[in-house]
Length: 190
Length: 154
Image (cartoon, rainbow over all chains, first blue to last red; front, side, top):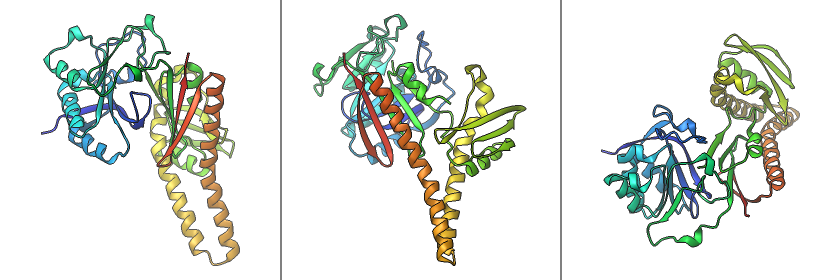
């Protein structure tokens, strides 16, 4: 039976969470509670929506032109069985996996290590507000480490830059993700 | 760490549908015209002003959970829009007189154009702000959704 993943948010296609176009999944629930976290709405383990991993994999087949998935949160490792099943399923489909976790390598248990080694790229470590740097690609603070785990990608894809993505939906609604400064976020003001 | 920012409600561009949606989530309409809708909901009064083609509420951040009712407005507004669109299409198809048909067609087109104008206006707003902040912007349109990637180096 497939594991259930609680998701806070998802994007079918994004270009700023790893190489190429990727489907991005924000897991719901995180107890690490980094000071200054931008995604506190994903801390509670009761919010978001539940979906089976098998359903996600079925939906991923329908999304053309994606290179892989990116799993972030929340904290993917606090839904370890579901995260592992999703990572394995994506690899079997030929999709690359970019994994974010707030845990350090030294804190990994066996299952976390399996998730890590099955991924192609991972960013590890807590967000540290004092080390916040929005000019870094794919991470929010300078202590966070980017690991190129498989041979699929290497350091050459990591050109440091600030990235923000705005999606304007057919109904005129804007969704913004990335490393936006206040002036940009104000566009969403009510 | 990156952020995710979403709007509390989808933008409401049409007065008739906005009123319908607000009433459906339990609001009492106190006064309403094309420029403003004043409502009472959960014992509090709010004024929605039409700015840049959509109805918005100006509040201070302390409003917090008092605005939770807005979370439910989006889906019902969307349903009201689809209902109105269906009605206008049916009326257009069944109109007996050519002049009547032309009038309803113009109404329907104006209704649909409100959203297109809003999308264009919001796109321009993002482009202008991005330019001011030194970003380069790449735009991709897919399934009616516009994706704008803002990148700044150095």
